[in-house]
Length: 135
Ligand SMILES: [Ca+2]
Ligand SMILES: [Ca+2]
Ligand SMILES: [Ca+2]
Image (cartoon, rainbow, N blue to C red; front, top):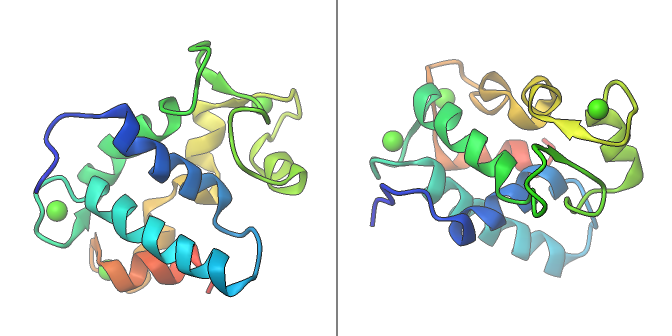
């Protein structure tokens, strides 16, 4: 069950989630988001112990960033990620229309500490989903 090799198709939902979690408010969207959160969590939790460490997060978030980069140019455009123009603007700090890896890492979507609400060094599923639902 523990995914040990990076699989782009597995990581796509994670990438979509990291970039799109504050989207629509409908129940269906919420359910889909929770489902995505569970699969994303499973991807992040490389050793399957139900806890995501900083190291696991750091490793997988790189994959999450590169997975949607369809043209492989090393950064993400609005066409490559599922976010609103407002969210894109928030992450695209220098406003050049491209999300670069450092911009992603600096954004709230890329911060382990923001997920680790109780600051105990690991992120569990409730913490993960709570943060993704914007709470
Ligand atoms: Ca783990
Ligand atoms: Ca930029
Ligand atoms: Ca924690």
